[in-house]
Image (cartoon, rainbow, N blue to C red; front, top):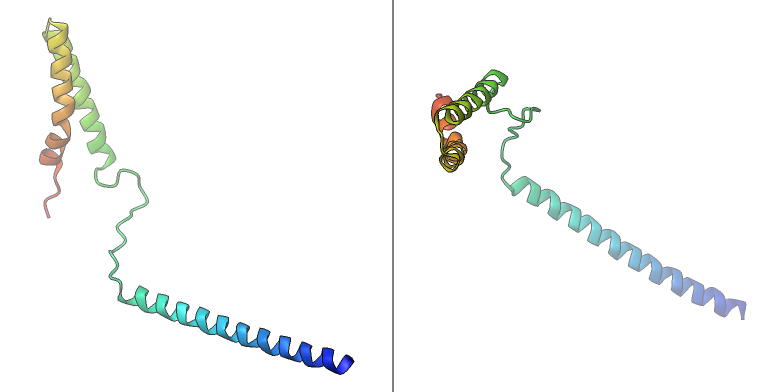
Length: 108
């Protein structure tokens, strides 16, 4: 009886070792494939600067905000009709990004 149990245990251990070896080979193969894919995949350069608004300096951003408030104030003071005021302010906000890019574009 004990010889039979020992034989079954040996078969069970051999099967477990075979499965463990197959799993190890699969993991190794997967890791090699990942390394190869990482090596072959082109990477973009890391362009982070650690600042939230890196494209414009603090002075440029302050100037854009100040000029925007000045333009809104001028519109509010010089235009009488409320609908026209709101339309001009909406137009200003719509055109502002393009004006900033044109005026403060980087010339390299």
